[in-house]
Image (cartoon, rainbow, N blue to C red; front, side, top):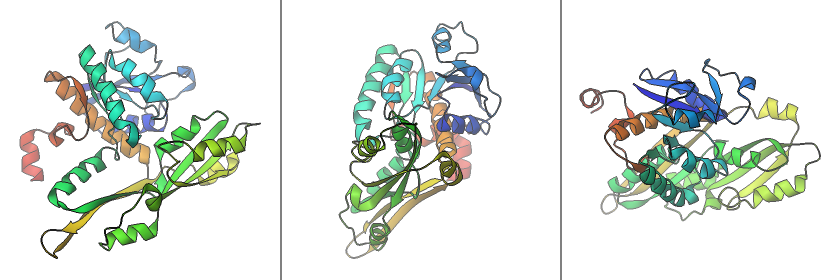
Length: 330
């Protein structure tokens, strides 16, 4: 058994909570939020606490059991870069930080903090970065003469949606990632095109603003946001609450990693991994729980520092023994 706590109770936090129901070796001691706990009803009946309670848990004298791992469910744009290193000073953590361009710097900061305080963290583990990162690594070694392409969507990007929500004046927001069909077809045909981010995807954003908000300023902020929207053809649409609820309340997403190339001479080969998920946050929550298990196991072995999906043996994600995995999966 390993104990976890969920920190942050937005969409990903609820996804992690639901995923824990399907993992019998995991116990969630509670949900921790900066909001008023009395205004939050857990979907599975877990107790809800203010994040300040974590300080007392770190001293082994709190309102609930001390967790082995915190599952950090904050946003990647502004929340995790500030809060994750602070939590890591007293707890092991796992997160789904997904700003690809900033992962190296984020990893270095978390690794330094973890080693200084004798803790362990697993960073940037969702489906991308995370599972798709593993696919890119394996595919590139299996088919050395080729190119790898990643396409996302059409679906809701949780990280990009959260980035918009953090803009002052934004009440609700959703950002869709849409692959360009011409680019995807060219890759699947084995043409091996040179594609920029703008060549592969477009971003579609739907926003409900607070009364009196400057929509022109918000649209410009979104379209020029580095690492999220600036490198893409981005459209911004302002809508009312009713339209948002009726048309943009789902969280489906998906994607595909494709590597095409040659084995020898003119012999072509292609390999791909695809994902379709009706609920992006629930799928991400399941991955976070699996890596929380791995984090607890690694820490018991005396490991400290930061780890990614590329650093951890796959068997550490499972609650099954190594023998069971060999008997059933090989």
